[in-house]
Length: 228
Image (cartoon, rainbow, N blue to C red; front, side, top):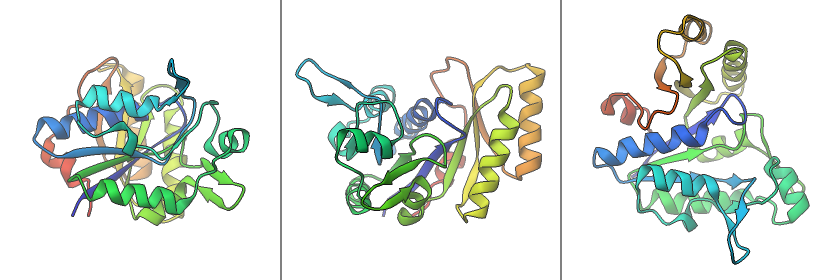
């Protein structure tokens, strides 16, 4: 049976895809059969044939070196760069939970470690038309525990603590925090880490330096975050 983990963030553009790619790369380097999945992906470009290219999926595949086909990584791909509920309202093809779940279960049936990335922050609307689906509904439906990705810089205490508090209130299990764009020796950023740990009670799993090509974390610690 595969082991799974969800990657959420304190907001858009904190580096969820970047961090997810490095996590999957680490797993692959240690001989794990690793895979990627995302329910809905917005803000994608078209190729020369006019087909939408799932940019986040291609980034993860390129960085990690996994052989998983891009076609099984994300069932819903949109062009306009807005939340999935609005993108589907503009472009059609609204997200259906059963489609997301079926695709996820198929990936889990093929790989040992499946890392699923969220869209935007934890309060991201996925569908508001035929049915109401929020990102937290996807996490709950799939029975996943999460890591929170945050920027290490100014303002992160507020965004990390609020994200963690909301997830706790919604009974969404959180395993820890990964700080991105970290600068060792920066007093403010190092204090941010201490403050976030103290206020949330969550461990800092890793700090990824600006422009790093790897995540520095013990492989046993990393794999222990994944659950069946």
